Length: 342
Image 1: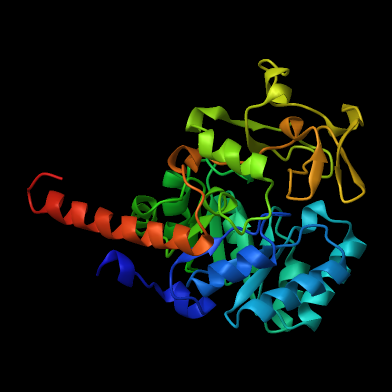
Image 2: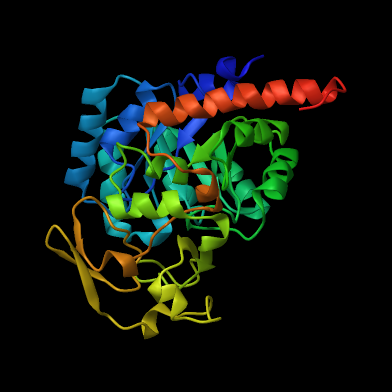
């Protein structure tokens, strides 16, 4: 097997060529990026968290206009008003999307509804307990997220341990998430028993990403230790929902108090604008192409893998790089196990 020929059973299940999944990042993973990843052989997940049904329909249609490859839509029941969630999911099912991806708390009714409509269901989890709950609810694929991940972080364990733990306790295909952005990390994930990797930071820093150029630049400049696990960016989400972001003036102002921040006690101060929508300091909004205002103080999401990201290619270029690096990693392993020197 060589790096460019990597193909696991989950690829056949999802309908992609390569075991590289785009994380369904809200605001960032829009149709342009999803279609680009799918066309390059990976698997795109459209990030539609708390978007209007009309916008979701538009984005689904745009993906299909750009590619005929399968993709999924990501929704987050725990962070969405039940009425809006019902309408969002209804729009996805009315348009017969091939798969749904859910994150955070396992909501069996959402999984059941998607499955009844003929969708594959991917569920992102951050613990063995959540993984087993998702499996029991009917999920087809588990995306297992380690604490190294950027954006909202569901669990507390390292992916190195959590992925293997979940693989040992479930019969479902597992995708590794959190710190996976290179070919070497893809090979490491496969060694742990996963069948692919789920990449957010690596694809945020691409041409097609809808993230603001300032956000992309911060990712390219960041080291692993520049990322911080905190719950200060809490508005728009339930309490106790930590995120990983790149350190900024807001983080510096917290001192050692990175955790224990209560959303109900945070001030409501407008610091930016998103196409006429006011954005609050401490909200979970990250700067997008169309955002103006105090971008530095916003949530600059990135995982620890930012330390390994120093270029801004197209999505296809990122996938090519990962697969090329995987080939190199396999060759290095072959040399090492043969008793030679890497």
